[in-house]
Length: 119
Image (cartoon, rainbow, N blue to C red):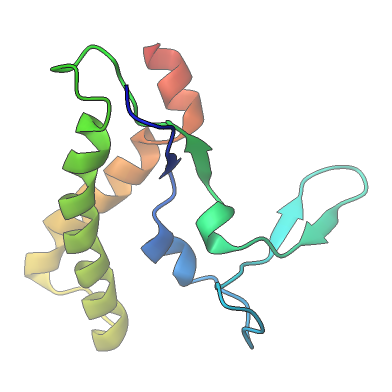
């Protein structure tokens, strides 16, 4: 069995778009606001935000505990490139619409509440 690993349900490339400025530490941070009667703010590192230990791990797929994480990685790479293109162009081109819809759909379904539903 492999060691536990931090898996992001919010991709780090996505969180980078919300990083605080100026960055004063080695790792980029974002603003996080706790929803409550008395909201509190903090600035966690992106590498520690939107993640859980072994979040994408499933013991039932080919005895490969990293199967889902390994499949998501190349998809996230393509999605990061797509978002960078859209931001640079400041518009969504016709051939980008389907890929953007795929990104939005994946973001909708990879959150903890959906995982709880599946389990």
